[in-house]
Length: 100
Picture 1 (spheres, rainbow, N blue to C red):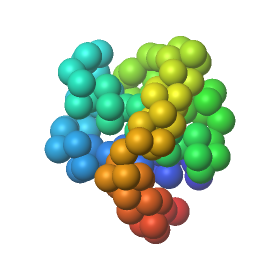
Picture 2: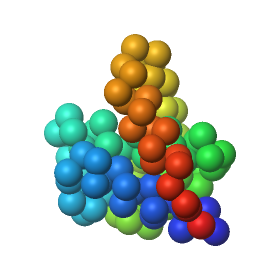
Picture 3: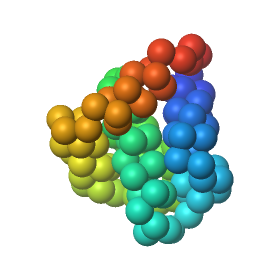
Picture 4: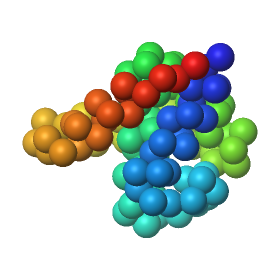
């Protein structure tokens, strides 16, 4: 059940950042891809989804990541939310979508 939500969030994040799905799950340090991953972690954690599940779903897509890197990404988005109203709107719009 949670994996379906993860996949839907990943799809929406890729649409917002105008990146291909595969880019999200490749070792890529481009700022837009990193920001997209961080947003994905944040959305999943807010759902709430356990960090270990996020790790597992990322690994299934070919991207191995450790626990602390996911927490770092969540923290970065949390900080950005405090100062960027447009980013907050994007997050709210994604959360409004019907996810099953």
